[in-house]
Image 1 (tube, rainbow, N blue to C red):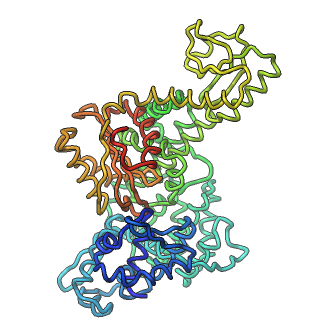
Image 2: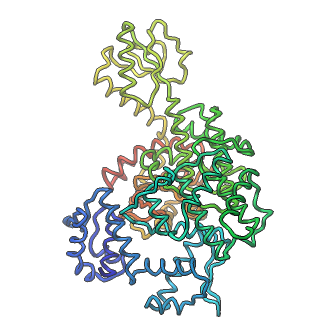
Image 3: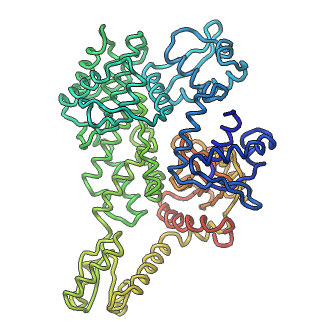
Length: 624
């Protein structure tokens, strides 16, 4: 398969909308004739995975595929790219493996000769390799008479190795596990470990971790256990080659609990024939300390974050009309302990991932979005760097609390007890987002007992000056539909009445090459309307570098929360073609948000409404 065919297939897999062959050629950077010449091969290749490439009049081509089909095709084409010597993926993999595994100095010329490409091509590849390594605080430099060299902490090199090797793994046939392999290690993980690190005794490394668990009194999650196992295996390999962690300022590394230090020292002494350094022990101890456990643990120092966590939860509660979040001691404690773990990750530059954010964004995009917008509050007490998985975990904790403590509602009726209880259950079934605590006869209803609660009544309470949703005594399907409309209208009226007005006609459609290009173009349009100052664009770009603002469902919310804004608004942007917003997530729609911090609750309702409007039409400026 030729390189151009691989590029065309990869590009189409990343698109969910139609695209003309002219636009496709421009995005890939090849001639139009080259694209058209290969379209029959493209259709044939997609067809092997049950994917249809259809032509749409005046719009171009589009693939029709399920998520499973896309993933299977993507895995195949990625595997092909990394095994085809003409591709940049193959060259980058070759360069990284050479830098990771060999101590010999490699020059640009030597890489060019071994890969049969020009020095210019290698130079471009090295830029991407440099960008990848930078995420792990490893710098790639080219030195005269020395060649291409990695500079930085050995701990970062090991993390880069693990990340890169995992990204290459598309093996489909998994080996059977021996009976003595821990159940937390999947067949996939076992096959990967044996094929990637076959010269190491993985079972011996597993025993070290099981001993450490017993000594520490913790149980690691399945993902954490597998990640720790791979780190121990790769550490043994690197130490044996005399690539050890050194030249770090020990004083800047805060000490973990002595028990973790002792567990790390014991494990390292068993995998190394010689005495290991203090830094090796410190880094493994920190790596073990931050590994996720199945039970929350009490950690000293986490109480330092209580004030910021309570402030954060109060904001989230206001946005979702769910009071009391900040008063729940268990929720506050769990997030405080999570922040302490993040602090250790930042200090030791520990990079961990499990892609939980993708599932959370898909199913809880609004809650994730609000948790993301307010996350800077949590970093006020000391510098913390949040990953998307961190925000996802906070979202899950808050979601679980809200499920346990739903917004309370009361049902006012004049029916007999049996009928009232039956109808109460009916309301609870149709509206699970509320907790219908009680059915109360209207003669015994005391408004002061239900202040700030949702009231549904079959009896007219207007004379009592009570804000209630009124339905008939039958509680039939029409009543249920009426309640749905009533709840929605109440929430919308509360949440974004003024915001819809100030954001009217702020709907744009544009083309962009990437995230930075999209932000620069929309900021130019907002500047023309005199909505933003000169520093607005810079703040958005810095924020995206800190943590990408994609919230799932191909939507992102670049935002600025400040009381010093020139004007408040939400600008809706539909991209003509989706773009890669972070490493794994594409985006088609943007909501560029500029509001005061206390107005996020207004944004939430507005975004919920916008999601349906964006889907229905790209020309909604008159309505928005």
